[in-house]
Length: 188
Image 1: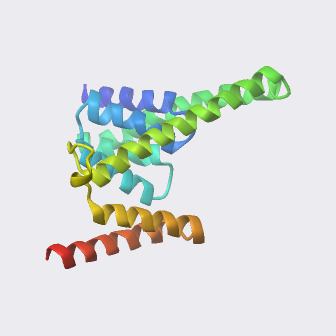
Image 2 (image 1 turned 60 degrees about the vertical axis):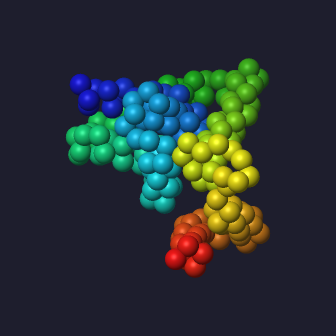
């Protein structure tokens, strides 16, 4: 039953995750933290970090990771298949539809309507992770609860990414090293 539940949970993620991997994060969080409490919010944040750092799509990496956590290798395979099956079916159908309707105004309208929804999903996921990183799990959003080291690392990473556009992996490693060094210096 667990394997079927894993397949169905990630089938839904794959089915409704329009806009790429980052847009899938709220859906993945809903499935693995809220509906099926396989992970807590702190573990989910770690999952996002690992899925972002490893090669491949975030949703696919996340499904494999969660499947492994829940049911080992069979869970990883089933969750991964659940995640990719809707995309496979949808892409096959859309390829035929696109070929027939690509010049129609209504079809272009549908595509332009999906773009803002994808941006909103990505922003929602980003805000959830930012709040967790700055205030911790279960903490209320208040100035006295803020993790100032995390805020500094976030601001510096954002500045570096926007100004010099280095590899995101190097920025993540640098932020991790900087955060660890500052915490060690401040808190021993």
